[in-house]
Length: 142
Image (cartoon, rainbow, N blue to C red):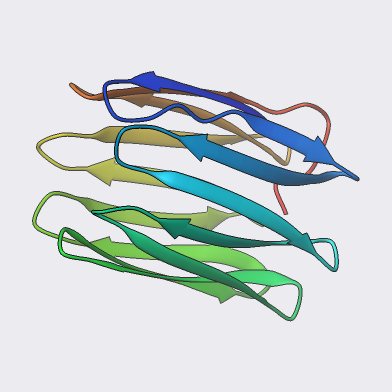
């Protein structure tokens, strides 16, 4: 996975390390480092509007996010990720399909559709404040 985000609020490159993803985000409102732990991703995000802690469980990712504008709970389901997010500005439902992740997000400020491509993740996001294009590079998303 290689990621690039450009918008008023975020810039995020992605770096592949040992077949897993390491992220770094920098922007006016967000800073997100990601740490590789036992081949899985552990995340910590901190900003004036967002706090996010991601913890791997049995080799899969479980997420918890809390902020004045966002609540996000991600739960692994048979080794794959199923997401549910709810807030005044964002609703996101992620459902695994054939062991890979398919995403749909809808809100007044964001639309995101993620589609698996031969077992890898390909992303496209478009909104008033964010454009994100993620391209897989011969690695599984987990």
